[in-house]
Image 1 (cartoon, rainbow, N blue to C red):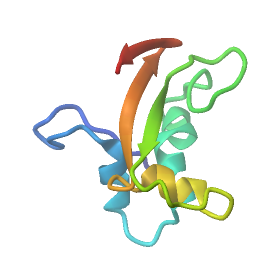
Image 2: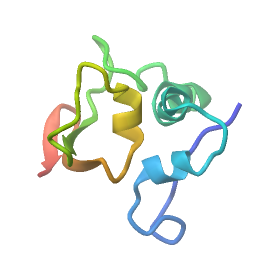
Image 3: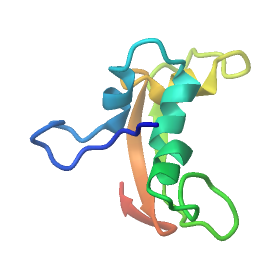
Length: 101
């Protein structure tokens, strides 16, 4: 098993872990997303992290779509989430509170 992370701007100048995950060849967007969420939590043996479920820490980001013409009915949500040019981070929530806007 493996996971993805960064400890500082020395290895990732903008700290966008999606870019780190996207550098791995041969994985679907869904698999890359899992490396940043539930798979990463599993490696840390943190069952209280990794997904939005009752009783877990509520940390998430709000992404803004950059192309209003995207058909959300047919678009792959994991492709949209992992595309760092198609979506930008608009808000960050930690422990359920907005920490960045």
